[in-house]
Image (cartoon, rainbow, N blue to C red; front, side, top):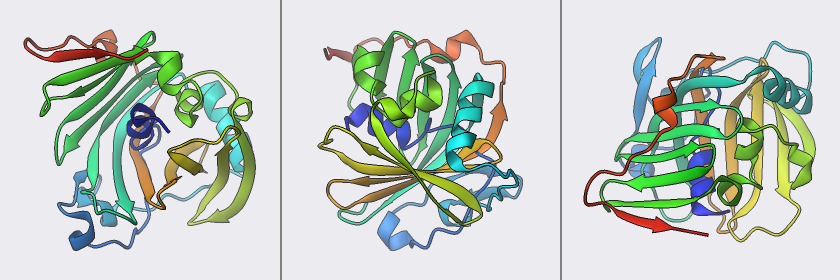
Length: 241
């Protein structure tokens, strides 16, 4: 999986549903500084995010279809953590999207980083490196689940999809790339009440990244400025084809 796609998913589309949660048994020694974000319970760490409970009878495949069909825009929060291999700090931040192809994925803790798409170009901005990379949307997320969650395509075009057993109060599906991906083995996506609630991405190095989406506001009015990026003065720009 391309780095840009990992960041979007490790977030997203990143993104979409942040009104749920479940206990994730990892400790601070493994994760480093625990990322936090705001919930109805106040500021909570990744391991304290409340559970979400699915009350819709349809399976994950149908819930994905309903989500793509009915949710045209959204805002919310995300938290993510990686286990296995080299320890990484947990991250949290905010997301927004507007179909087709516009999204904003902003990591706020423990460091700032942004991935923004205006529908044509995707910008990945790292303030610490004072660098922004740019690429066409189709090259950044064209064959990723992010393009399905934020776009209008069909997951089956690029992935083999199968329904998994219900777990943790949510319904699941697994998407495996039809073409071998150097970065991703597969991604499991959980749905609750016709919204994506959790992503678990297994990479080729045996690491699992779990992304939880919360405080999801469906069909929210999102300012056009959210999907506009202007590089600060002095920032290096790298265009990837």
